[in-house]
Image (cartoon, rainbow, N blue to C red):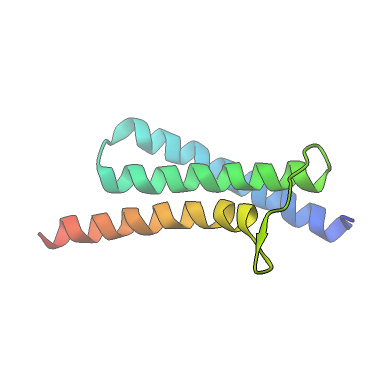
Length: 99
């Protein structure tokens, strides 16, 4: 079950991610560079991941666990996707600055 420490960490995480998502959307409206767009998408996906985790922890949604060799595929993909977009954005930015 969820303890008081888990709830406080979750609330802080969701609040800060919400602020980062709002600022990322503001940045999205100001720029159309592919590198920045990938980073913004990664931040938005991270916020979606946190909201989904929150709903799952409070029992508002149920996720069917699909595991491959003991690895929860759904949660692994959900947590890795934002970072993959951020890495792609940073890589695209480095590539654009070096050319």
